[in-house]
Image 1 (cartoon, one colour):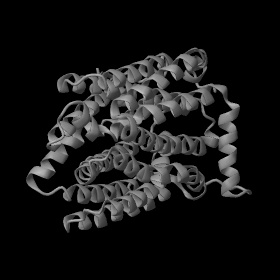
Image 2 (tube, rainbow, N blue to C red):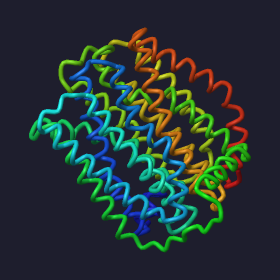
Image 3 (tube, rainbow, N blue to C red):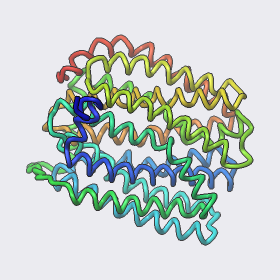
Image 4 (cartoon, rainbow, N blue to C red):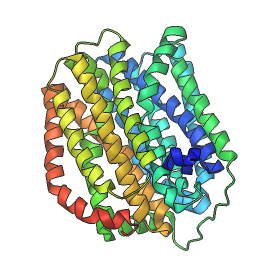
Length: 415
């Protein structure tokens, strides 16, 4: 039995040199990104002790990506996905280096964090859609697409599994400012690895402008019932469930009484990431689209359920286990949605559709973090999380039958 067979879909995806190079750079950049995210969360909470500021910083980091992602898809189709990603990565890396210098010199004005977070969001707004839309061109066979998507998605969502450990080492042996330096260097490394890919990109030649390209992608989503249902379901997840990651510093103190040092916070990040890693590895080895609709439906139910219970317990160990379940469930939903959409979408509009869904994935959690942080400031963190979970469960009840009905066609590559 070959190594590729033993590893299932993972072995088939990594048989491609281009995918191996891409994955190596992607993982490095994601680890740097997550380490910086943990550092930002801890610094903002230490300076302000405010759920509102946690949500506002997350909003500033993501809303540019939400607004610019559709433009990035159209720009990538016209001028090259790799070129777009490389330029964005260099800008993002440089911003992190400047942020490192500022924190190293004792920056404690949280308003400057808004500026740096916003610039980072602009870079990510062009980088993330371009790197995701590149994935189908990196593999040897279309049959390996679902495995490549699972590996790529799991790599992002499993960042919290390793990043808290790296963050703890950075704080212990260096300085918290080094987290920003690490992120900048990792972004530069990914840009270098993208330059080594053996790609022959075909740039689109279009008569209309960028705006008309964006509208074409939006109209396509609206005309495909299956894709539209998945997009709407994911909108609720991004708005109501995903923001819990940005609020974990508050979880650690308000729910579990672990706000005195970074240990409790990093453990919660770690367990959430561990769940993501487990789910991603399983789905990548599984390596097929059949049944992804059912996985997505039950993953949605689990995600909302465990988040609700995590807000109702004061036991730290129980909370950590529940957040492991949250990470696992969210990754099942993320991989399922990306696999269904990427399998069913017309290749002619792939870049624009993926950029639109990426913009939603970036922007709605930012809006959700801001809203939940505001509600938590007013009514308390527990009512905010429980209320969001209840609304999410109502959305699940409305959408589950339609999703199960449309999923088989999408799994077979038909929108």
